[in-house]
Length: 185
Image (cartoon, rainbow, N blue to C red; front, side, top):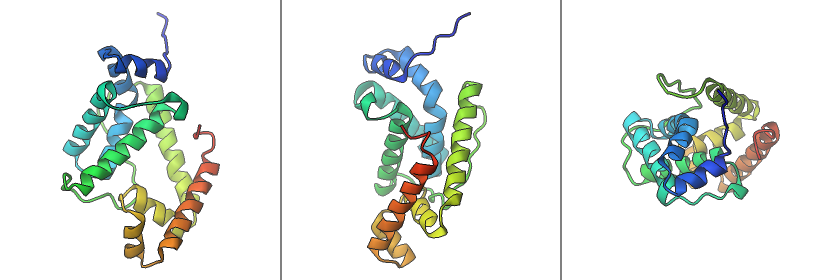
């Protein structure tokens, strides 16, 4: 049996043409990681499931994806984060936000072992890279990305000037980019 691995761009184009098999392939590849991010932000499994379904069904109809702007995984994670934060801001999520960088392990998530290993390794590398940042930069990034706070909300929470929040965020992101350069396309 010969296994054919298709490019994400080709599969995405087929999904946007209404090919439900292509949509299934994308879900099998990225459904677990989208769900984990949604769960991390929304903190309720039902909300995370709903958002995951919304993300993947939207791929077929309304969500524009341009492969020249970046890889599909980054696109899906950005889309998931954005929509999860919108849900929180609109009051659709009742759970508290996750307060620290934690590893959520899901059970019974159907996925290929190599993809699970790669996603797990990527998650561990990002968590390790975050740990190497100075505490003040790490704190600002965790508040922004894991708790969904805006820069002005971080300013209020930490009682520091907005310029300091922006500076720490930028410096931390640049350090992460350098540390994770092989993951950034």
